[in-house]
Length: 293
Image (cartoon, rainbow, N blue to C red; front, side, top):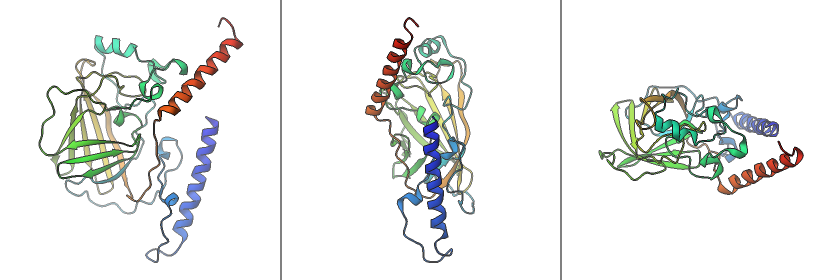
């Protein structure tokens, strides 16, 4: 943890120096130096308590009508300690039983690291949906096509197709890691996404909150201004929870320059296996040091 913090501080100092040096070259409106890749990176410092860069987003303007395009960053971070921001509804008996099989690294189901069975961190499985919105929600870029809006997410370099051509959600879908999604403009500034067909092997968040394949998700992306956006996520899973509940409530996003080079964050299976092997070795050493414990 200490080494990670030191590395983060060094990286921040280097980025600050690079950013200030770039801004100092030439007067505003004059000849601009060529972009250097490292100068246009955007790191998720909001979730570490460290300053955010760059802070100069320029003046904000009115929201354009029915436009979601752009590269967006959660202004207060979507990486909660327990993933979802909202308070989960009470679990049904099925949900209680399912939740007891989840051994997480955080929250009420937290266990020692070697005993965690989170499929994301122990098997390298995809995080899935809607965990994509409730844990490790970082940058997202919306790319419109003739028939859909493609949402490209920084975490794991995943993308989702949100169909906008009027089709309906499947009535009896085969489960998918990232489900099925359709979207529509409710008004000029609110884009509503409805999804189903989620795979119940995935968790809702890193706290191990469960869901079933009956889960329905509603996302409300509300454009506040030219550079501000907010997201509300409502979950409805009658098999796992006694009532619908809000998991993200008006999570704020800011629009950042599209020439930013987003850092890569992949959940690589080889790295997962290496961490698991290290935990196993450390546990064996502990047993040898304290026999019978």
